Amino acid sequence: MQNQFFKDLIVIELASVLAGPAVGMFFAELGAKVIKIENKHTGGDVTRKWKLPGEDVDSPYSAYYHCTNWNKEVQLLDLKNMEDRAIVHDLVRKADVVISNFHEATAQKLGMDSPSLRALNPQLIYAQLNAYADGDTAPAFDVILQAEAGFLYMTGEPDRPLVRMPVALIDLISGHQLKEAVLLALIHRMRTGEGSYVSASLFESAVASLANQATNWLMAGHIPQRMGSRHPNIVPYGDAFICKDGKLLILAVGTAQQFKKLCACLGKPQIAEDKRFNTNAARVKHRDELIALLTPLFHDINADVILKQLKSNSVPAAGVYNMQEVFEQPLAQNMILEEPLPNGNVSKRVKTVAFHLKK
Image (tube, rainbow, N blue to C red; front, side, top):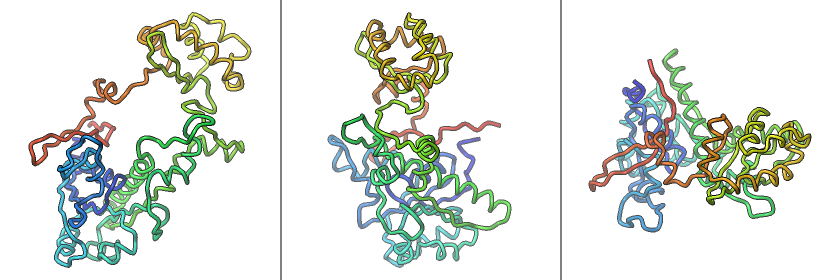
């Protein structure tokens, strides 16, 4: 049921790079027909050229391109050419959704702006992705938004250079915002028969995702600092420990009961009774002292032994996995999507849909 939920939906994707194509792939995974329009004069979506060392330089695709372009019908067109533009306009007349990340002025010049396309199809949902507000012409690259929305300032280790999040997270969360807007527009159309213009911006999406870090500032006047993987409000949470076998383990202890069980598993239940550590507030205040006590305890035990013990006692803990180890897990294996390529190879990427819908 889930994989064919949108089987009668037609989506035209005028977007490139990551955020917009991720929205298109969401609908493709749920059965929609997604037609991706790429610029034939530039060789298609710019991400086709974003290749790792060792990738086939002659291939028309990169691994990066594949991550959000599964099961789409690709048409390489020149939208400055009136015949090619007419092809897109014909597609739009039968489409349900258009996804665009064109700047407004560019879209107008190409005849791909919302008023032009909705004049062809009044029931059309035009979904626009912006860097900032509608009409803004500033370029949108994820690391710039990470900087402007505060993520870059607070990511990394204290007194060390800043660290970019290793996936384009702002692109991804803005894609999620735009999906939600399109889904609301589809509900509205189902009720009224009317199309809509919906938009989302990378900046607003990033700010909307600041969560507790934003409220720590807005309500407590606290400017989040670089803490590595640690948490400003909870201890031990995000603290990592090296075990006897050299493997790295990380904790996410969020309750008093979990902390007591942690100490018991480590053979030191008395730590949980110490006044410096018997409440979360006290542990936050005495963070460094607590970590100094716990660190040698992990040095004396192998990671698989303590992990098994912690998990059996419902203490949140995990090994720190590389990408190979991630995809050795059965649940991650189930998230892989494959697609045959024209040259006979098979491309792989992970699903963007991570929910399950059942009757």
